[in-house]
Image (tube, rainbow, N blue to C red; front, side, top):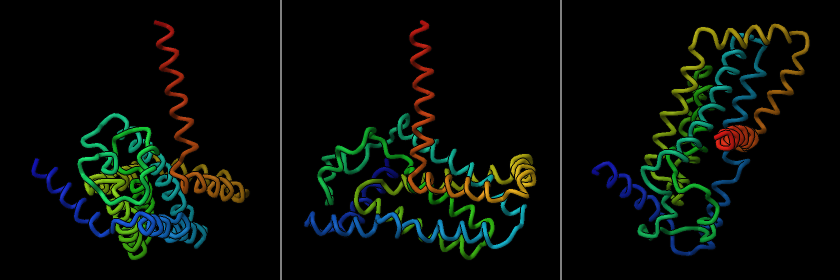
Length: 238
């Protein structure tokens, strides 16, 4: 209860930074949530690390981390559907938040917001960068905490605990995957097979990062379609 009260107090404190002018708040959201602005540092750093040399060990670790990032985002979305410690702040009329757009309440198919899938994505990617370059990785963590996490709390999309949950989930999954004895070596062997055709790997990487830039919506739809199809098939069988 104490943790929940502190969570709410922090949310209201951050949200109070906004005024009551919805048009002004909407403009602030458009600037802060601009996809190019929020993603530039993270994705630029990833690609810079990838192309900074032909080190197959580094690239195999990064591929292991990227696969873990995909899993972490899917887990965060699954948790939002199945675990609801609180409803999304802007959907709770009892909080009386300053919001940028009243239509936001109609955007969400699920009331849960724990943990933030967007923050999970960016914290996961920041972890990949951190494991290869500590200084740049720290900058990416700080960027994600402020630009991704902070803005979402200020505008009532998430509680602070949602961001903390993402900070734990994303890096934990990436660190686990990178340090599992057989994952990175598996990608290393795959890279060796394509050593004379690395342009194929580069093309696939760009394709993957494009979907990552959009929170893996493509992968999410595929996975949930498969799961819903199996559920429907099981129901019909009974």
